[in-house]
Length: 241
Length: 241
DNA sequence: CGGCGCGTTGACCAGTGTCAATACAGGTGG
DNA sequence: CCACCTGTATTGACACTGGTCAACGCGCCG
Image (cartoon, rainbow over all chains, first blue to last red; front, side):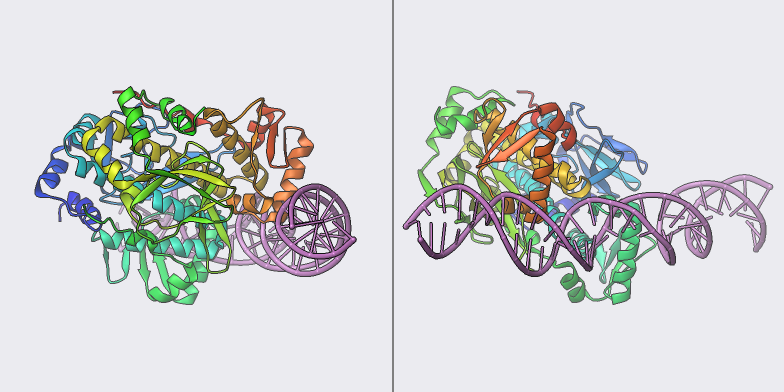
């Protein structure tokens, strides 16, 4: 499967794309780029003229605080636009960084603008794509605000499982998650030490395992229960029109 | 000032609207509605055919958890679209409720669709509007994940001050915030009791006061410092094109 | 005047954070 | 193939933020 097909897989869960639209999306890719782990891809406040589609690897959006801490506000996998919102915002309020070796497709804003001028339906689909990001943001807010550390981490493992599955990157209840416990801590607003404790606890339940950068779900129902996981964001259907 | 002008004030901070575009936005309003406090306006999972622009009062987006807790994921004031994202998502993954008596303008999705077919620039501006919501989501994620309760509450008071100011609803460092401490707790992921303790602490610093539903900022710099407030989301400029 | 929601207080407790030491695993040069 | 290095995972002792529970007060409204 080509990497861009992962984007199609994701979008077509919500709405049908015509041949023309698929072709248009393929055409807007100006070039591809690669980044090493921990490299910043987009820096806060720098005017952007391009957006980027992730083809492989994992990236995050993060903000740093004065006290040296950082909070990750989004994780992205292949098929995700990592900064489509820079098309309308022009400058981002956060950084985007590679968490693994990363390949991405670069899409000039001019090309996107052209799409908004001539392909209204595709425009709505792209808009929708940014709204799916926002739905996940909301899940994170709920998890950060009202879930226990254990439920939160479990929740993230559920979310990433479904997201990987949708784009064909999960098999047999397992998927790659090549992050460190410290990274996970920056996602969940915890410390690396506590993430470690939580993972031991989850492992002990037998519901899930996370070793050598790969997550294996042994008992999906149990994991979902621990996580108080709400898959609503996955089912947000777009009624084609 | 008409309520819809507050929307224009907000949008024109980022991009110029033409007369045509302003007129188009006024035209899409099908009718207005009012709600009593605590009434749900949009319910999770129910297919929507309209979006709503808040004309007066305060609304929130929230999710309830199995354990009876709730987390508010967004607050909205006059001039905000409370569910513009339902245009692309069709069903929401959360509820939207009135927190005060509320007036809103109802905008049929058909009319929005018409805009996307015929007015690409205005479409981009509406898209941008949903991206501003997302920028605030990110601030909340950072606050929830990495800020102390005190900083978080202070941060919210800063954010709401700027947002009210932008749409002409703040004066002399003060603005209305007719919520209960329990509401604030659901925003910040705290308990009502702790919000109370935090407010006492903030009051004691002399930086800010919140009584009878109105916030008064006595020392903006101090408040901003306590909050580790980052006004970046306000400055996200849209370079007109 | 009474009721009720909201704000306030105090005593106590649980969940996470902090700090610092130790174990391990994968990648490297010899 | 081995010894070493470095980043990451793991552990334990202890501190602290914020949660819990329960009572009480106050202001507004009917």
